[in-house]
Amino acid sequence: MKKTILIMLIISILLLTACDMQVGITDNITAPDNNRLPLSGQWVISDYKMGTVSMLDEEGTKAYLGTEVLFHKDLVAVGEVYTLDPSYRIKHVNMEDYLIYQYKVNPEFLDLENDEIQVISIVGKEQFFYEFMKISEDIVIVNIDGVFFYLSKVSDNIEEERVASYYFEEGAISKAVDMADEDILRTGILLGLKSLDLENKDDLEKWSYRTIFIRSHNGHIVSIQQMENILIPRRTGFWKIEVVREETGGKINDKIMAYPVSKTIDVSNIEIVRMDKVKEESSIKNILYVGNDYISIENIQYRSRGERFLEFYPIESIDKGIPMKISDIAGQIGKEAFEEGFNKEILLQNEEYKKSLIDLRPNEESFGLYRRNGHWVFEGRIHSIENGVYEYKNFNIKAIPPKEIVQYDEMPIPWNVIKTKVPDALDAFISPNEDIVIVVTHNSLLIYLIYNGQMGDIPVERIELKTGEKVIMAEWTVGRYPQIWEEEFTK
Image (cartoon, rainbow, N blue to C red; front, side, top):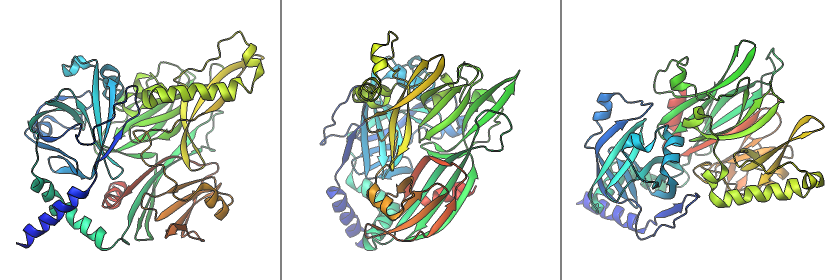
């Protein structure tokens, strides 16, 4: 009887929960019907096809066959893996471009003929869950650990008791605790940092990378750890990103390598993990930003004229050497903002460019992500030759990076308030729980607690920075995930 009452209570809570429907910014934007989910009902994994890089063996892959998949406004579940209170984010993409950029396969590999498909990203509490390709009303494809699984629809409906059972078995207890004691806050962050390698013996720039993990519990910093290179949380688990410098025949090349830490990989296996087989020779790489699925870099052609190209890639497709255009991720709005930024900041402020016979229009691929006043922002770059000397200029792009690129980038405490409190602040990161703020200065990371929306007066922790060290990644996690992340980090 008590269990029945509890389930009825949970169902009541679920019915009051609004479905957060957000649209991805792409070339073709479709506003979803709030009364109808883009995916709904009961589905089952009926078939699969191994990807070009699969982390599952044949036995592990076959174990997924028959797995039930549920889509509901309050729950998305793939077998025992699920997320509560999901957001459905919809984008319409060119199928061939999407498959090549994201997974290094073409439509023929998956026996698909559509020119355009609908991609639905599922996000739960700022955590990416999975991305589903809707092929038809009855067929959906999802990539899990490098394997393409085909989902077949079984029913349009899900009994509310099924949804409630997920809350009851695991989520309801956590939800009840949060409702009973709002003071319990669990927060974690992975910060990726880069600095110039001052011990580098050659004359070329070289950067060192490291990751710092910080976890707080109910207003107390309980863990601070660090490791070399970049550790990035992805939908398929944690990945590691490294930059390896090679010298062959007097030529120096940087190779960006990205690989899952859950699988033992021989890093000398270029075909699997070397994510930068760009055709240019003698180039060095400077990472500007790393996110769950994308990486922004500066590609420096030092043996030519020293050109410094901005390039933006999906992590899985950097080996293709084909940078994305800003319209690929920010749609027509992003393209127009790109052109507007160039016109206002380059053409209007440089009279000589207006009279030039050279076509100075910027390449739409020439953009990157930078930090400014507590936010990630787009910047474009224009190249020119002045008196035989190569030069470049950056310009602002007034387009907000979509959540597919930057997961969380909010500043509940205004930047001017932070600067007043910490005059030498260069940057700041505030947790989704609004319980801690990390302030970056020239030589330190300062961790402040937040009380009732107000930043504390004295930092509770200080982490020393290397000379000129900058943040290139900030991935927050809350709820039950910080401890899980810490366990993975410790491994």
